[in-house]
Structure formats: structure tokens, C-alpha cells
View 1 (cartoon, rainbow, N blue to C red):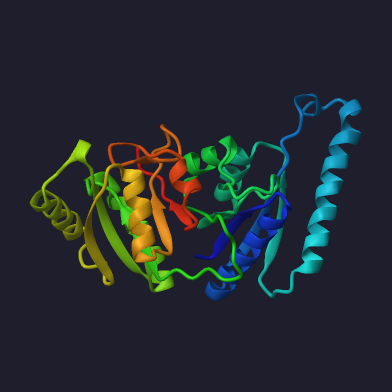
View 2: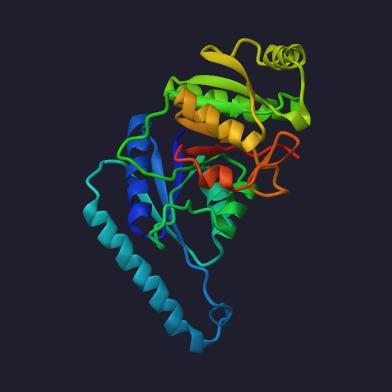
Length: 275
């Protein structure tokens, strides 16, 4: 992990999230690309001279905000400011490709003062479309401590590649992985069937996984099962797997609502499923 992309809207919680990312970058000697996306009104997206002063105003204001932010930061981590005049999802994808980003870091909205995650339509599209893992935190702290990662899925072959990325991240943090199958009345499997799936899945990893445990967790719904497991086992990070087609929470054989993220204080890592 050498290049981390952090999105910011200059809100209080967004800046707090940047401090978390700085701690992560310092730990792994990584570089931070700090992105602010300005989605200009359509009338300003033309080349007419009439729109130029207003466009320059937005760009100048953003530059001033960056300068004020850097005055507050006391760090030797290299931070590169980026301004894109496009939607956040498009801007993130462009930066990922141009600067070979390894991880996208997104914090909470903060603008409304509520404790809801920055998971509006734009951020949801980022999670769906980003080709690299996206780490979203709800309650930023000065230091991100990840010692236990929950990796929940149905353990079919389509999760093999995302799982490899999760394993690499676990090694970076020296964290243990909990492999969890949430068993529900509507998609019920026997313990024998689930254990067989997990066994076949882990065989494909060829011994790359060192610190892990497997769990079968029974609950009414997948969402509540994940939330309850995380709470009971004091998990530090939840892995989710958007497929790029059905929104942020395509998971198992269906869609987990964004309530899973909004109702959990635990950081969430999204790793895109291969189509």
C-alpha cells in the first residue's frame, strides 16, 4: 500500500478522517492524494468567457481551503492536493488510474451534523465502480486499529479474488480474519453443507491465510446477523462486496440495504466483485 486516495469536502469529520488516513500512511510509508471534487453547474461547464470568473472563484476557494488545511496538519507524510471539476465517482476513477491508487479512503459527511455516513448517491457510485478497495469510516479516530476483520460471504468461487485482497490487507495490519456465513431461515443450509463450502473455499487459498477462524452465525436476516456478529466479537473492520450493478451492498445472493453501513459504527471495506 503505497498510494492512498482520500476524498474531502473540508467538513470537520472529513478532516478528522484525513488524520486517520495520515496515521495509516505514516505506518506504511505511503503517499496521500487528497481529492476535492467540484461538480460545477452545467452552465459553467462551457468554454464561454462569461462562465470563466465563476469557475475561477470555485477553484480559488478550494485552493484557499487546501492552504488552510495544510497549516493545521503537522505531519511528514507527503500529501498531494487534487482538484477535479467532475462528479466524485468520475474524479475518483480518474485519480485511481492516473496515480495507481491502492486504497480509497472516504470519511463521514459531517456537513449535516448527523452521524450518517457519507454514503449518498455519489459515494455509493464510488463504492460500486472503484477498481480498488474503498475504506469508509463513520466515526473517525486519531488512529485506525484493525486487529480483527470480518469477511462474510456465501463462499462461492466469485469471492476468491476479493478474498485475496482482504488477506493482503489483513497481513498489512497483522489482523485475524473471521470467515462468517450468516445462516437465515430463508436461505438455510445445514452446518455440514456450510463447513464443506468453507473447506473447499479455503483449499483454493493455498495456505496464504494464517490467522483466521470460521463461523456459522444464525439470524433472521443477513444484515442483522452481520451487525450482531460484529458487536459480539468486537470486529474492527467489515468487508462488503459490491458487484458494480446492484448498488453498495450486493452480498450473498441478494442485496444488503445501506442500513447495514449506516447502523454500524465499525469501519467498512468494500472490495468490488469481478463481473
